[in-house]
Length: 352
Ligand SMILES: Nc1ncnc2c1ncn2[C@@H]1O[C@H](COP(=O)(O)OP(=O)(O)OP(=O)(O)O)[C@@H](O)[C@H]1O
Image (tube, rainbow, N blue to C red):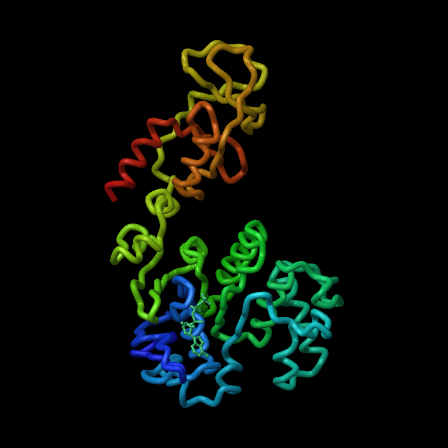
């Protein structure tokens, strides 16, 4: 657990970057610091590993004030990942990852085998270990940055805008990779971003900061979207807050119809305006009107019970029928969520 107790940082020129910050980052969870540029996120993060020292207040690591621990010892237990990875350009990837184990005096063989294990853990091919950083894409370099931070198995990981410099698709896959890794490793992670969507996706808890280094709200993402503390937080969350809330609403209770599917090749007439054509083994093909013979229209699908209401609504909007195709884990159709069923579920979500 990392605890900020009324922490203030005043730079020598008088700038108050962080102002009486009280915050807890629980063990094994991802706490995200989010807020507009200059609100003191990076300063707060760097005070944890003492790259910057607090002017007032205390930061405790499992109850022990970090100010009393000498920085090299402190940093041995704290991994640090920054934007653009910050890899050493003249060292091979494997040696970049093994940086901290080498510093800790591990023998070369052990350090390198740990590095290779981590390379795989972050989803990279072992062959990349022999390359130099410039021979990797930006996204691959970021993964190496994460592997390097994890090399000595520190309980705490500080991440400062680690995924900001890559395109949105790579960014999504890095975020998914981090969540997968975290479900296995359970590190105490403090993650800085200015992107509220990233904060909501990754954070167990999200701390919204405002310029002047004050905490505006600390809450889990669901609460944040449902009950923003004030106008600043509401504005920062953006206009589509209502839609984004749906990503926390389960599709489990969504009522499904199972009478709207017809097998491929069937020429049966249906009184329904739309029916879903499925293959012999139950996979979706497309929508056709109740009258056979017309061309098939595209469908949108979601995984029932696993995906959120946001995904189900998106699936419905992707199809001219207005219905969402519900799939099981095996990719086969388990039913159809009609517009009416979606309406009912949305009304319930709005109430709750
Ligand atoms: N060394 C310094 N001396 C004086 N002021 C500083 C120094 N470093 C940062 N600041 C100021 O402290 C405030 C907080 O900066 P910080 O980098 O912590 O914000 P941030 O929220 O991480 O911003 P960004 O999202 O733009 O990276 C800003 O006003 C910044 O200009």
